[in-house]
Length: 232
Image (cartoon, rainbow, N blue to C red; front, side, top):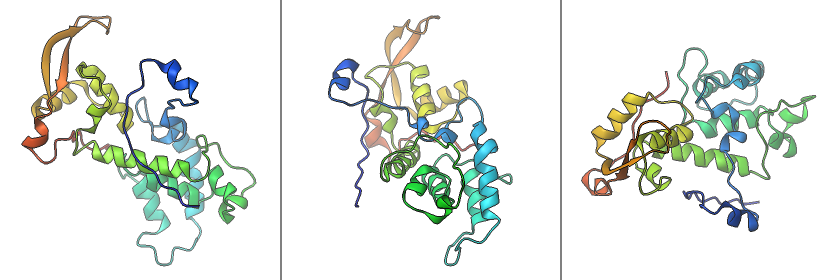
């Protein structure tokens, strides 16, 4: 089977009922990759299941001949163990490691010996048909990387928005919380947005200024993204 995936960004339609009538729906991608969501804290599933099982797996040789990196090194770089930082862009690398170790249902369904040898599989996110979860992992990794050098986040925003709404969208994509004041300084210093002169009262507190994306920035510099740094 050959799978071809295209990455496209869109906002949820205001009339959600119309989407449901054709059998379509928006789903949170952390339902399929719970270990990727660091917005509240380090996901418990990492220490409770993933890291111990991968530590056990990497303690034995598994056909590493010809690999640039061994299993231990891949575990360190992909899952941030041994003092290494968590790299939010390595979504696909992490998924592939779990697949090779036979820890997810797709591996068992595909007849991977590592998965068939296990008496039971841990619950590591919801599986998808065929290789669709791998395609989704590729899309998340690509989007997280592109966020830093292209203003793709504004394709997901309405024409006008508050900086809080923008921050929440960036956090949802990157899977981690950002310091509010640092984020605002970053956005303002990059001149990606401009105030509309209007305010929003939807926050329930004091009115928040509304902004719009400055499309002129696309012709002003080659990489107009949000380089918000890496996780320590």
